[in-house]
Amino acid sequence: MKKEIYLTFDMDWAIDEVLEYFYELIEKCQVAATLNVTHETPLLQKFECSRKVELGIHPNYNDLLNTRGGYAATARAYWKI
Picture 1 (cartoon, rainbow, N blue to C red):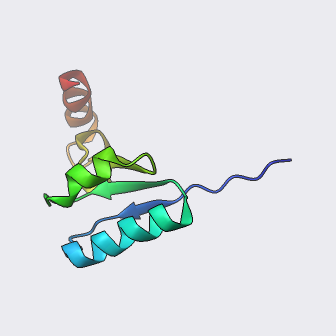
Picture 2: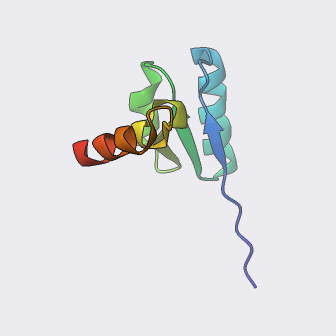
């Protein structure tokens, strides 16, 4: 049976030097990873062009996962899509 590992990382307001190191490490090791975005950085364009990095929406910024507003807020967010 083939085993698979999924790597996900949160940017969590990391400085660009750390994000650059992350990018170089992913490319060097030839592994794929999902990077959940939390802020703007010029490096996002570099990540978008990479075949090894998938960009995702950090759960804190996804209205569908925000349950503070209850069902009505979740339904409104869903229908915006």
